[in-house]
Length: 480
Image 1 (tube, one colour):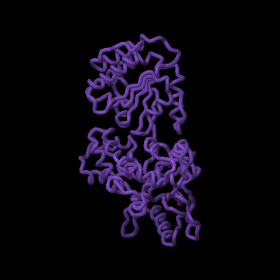
Image 2 (image 1 turned 90 degrees about the horizontal axis):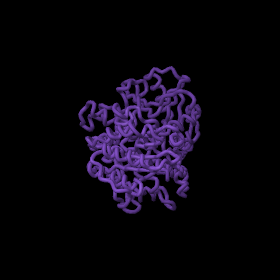
Image 3 (image 1 turned 45 degrees about the horizontal axis):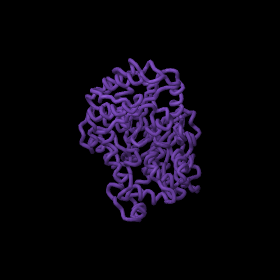
Image 4 (image 1 turned 180 degrees about the vertical axis):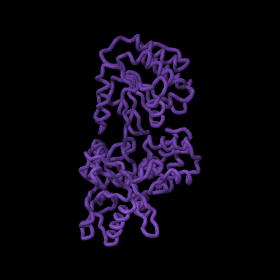
């Protein structure tokens, strides 16, 4: 049991604990589409997976029941024929009957219900029947029931926060996240792809840590060649991925896509009011739900500006693929051979690359804190924006780390192909930024100016005495 898995140590510990437990276990595995949820479950349980049922998108209730009936027949002793269940209540009663007839085995039974949101469609009665199955039978057995779904927000609202028969029934929750840069490096090496970290970073800024996307990277090709083939060729996996990504997760996905497009248009991010203005969506609870669904599914992130209340939250599109798709794949594909190499030399690409690098840093804050040796110090990460006035020039800080030891790291995140050099003019701007931040925020904490770049800083007379911390991309590849 348990194949070689990249990372996932926390998740594997929970699965091992459930397997070794003497009690019934209901495990909820939550994570965005293509992240590897099904692979994790199958790899861990392998031959001990007794029954696997996967919902079908857009299938009718009758079709789902017919599929379930077919699987029950294959699962039952001697493949005894069964009538198609009349309802989900009937389906689970039949499942109980089959399980009770089977000979006792000296291990836990494992049932896996994948893509649960598609099984539990509106008015299907699935959740009520499933709740009855768990509460009246499964919870008293030596059994593991794994439930899984790509619609993370649905899983959280309907299962984790269920107020009906499934209230507080989940015994273990697994939130599966994309690979970190460190895990991505290991993943590529297991596929005999030995890129240097700069090339891995370039791949990551486009595909993120989504294993299904990274599997498309071929050895023997440069990062540039792989990006062109995967994203811009007619048969490239990611050329058409965006069209199916959001509809597979959300009802009325056009509203979610509208928000994603709005956020892709502004590097600094948008607050709620600005998103409403651009999308022209109605304000209210339904809009809040859209934001929460995108956030819990891992597409957008929210940041509380330094010193501001929750109502001033700033939202950024932090899904690497969506950002790249909207700026390059959608407007430019298909490209002729070599077209991507030319496009990657444009100012448009260089601007995008700077923002994408910021996102990667924001998704690796634990690694940054580790490099600063403040992992054990309580801190909060936020951003800061000052529009400016007649007395002070406007400033923006994409990442600041407010620490409990009376200090704040003001982080400059820069992506360049060579060591970054601070000029006389830029040094003046940095000093002005620090002074403006201190005055406007009215903080009494000491400020540390921290640089995170691809190849580090080129030390010169302008960086000395100004920059307190200087890190290259290697720190982002550290394990948490």
